[in-house]
Each structure stands twice: as structure tokens, then as C-alpha cells.
Length: 89
Image (spheres, rainbow, N blue to C red):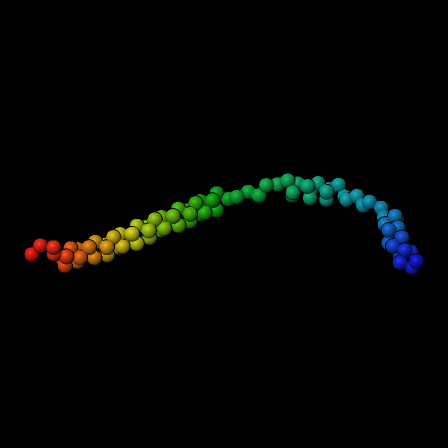
């Protein structure tokens, strides 16, 4: 019984609440801030583009270097095998 009274009291506690209206100037200032799109500076965009370009260039150079190094090692190995593999003497 006591629990039912407590539940009713909690449910009825919001009956006296009145809706608050904000100040018009404050409300319009908040709405303008929400609707503004942040402006990206051109310098920041160029810096990001240059960073991405540098990243891809370094990756391509690294891939080419490692591939050519592996090919040189492989060709050196095949030349050694060709010298030692004499079928006809």
C-alpha cells in the first residue's frame, strides 16, 4: 500500500511543472550557431593534400625499392645455380 502511494506521488510530481520559454535572442543565437557550417581553411586543405601525396609517394618508392632488391637477390641466386649446374662437360 505504501509503495502504491509512493508511485502515485512520483507520477503526480510533474503535474505542477510549467514549460520554460527561452529568451528570443538567446534562442536565435543558439539556432544560428547550430546552423553554421564550420569553415575549413584553404591552408589546412593544402596541408592535408600534401601529406596524403607524400604518404603515397613514399609507399610507392618503398615498394619499388624492396621489389628491385628481391629481384637482384633472385637473379644473383639464379646466376650461381647456372654456373654450378653443368649438364654437359
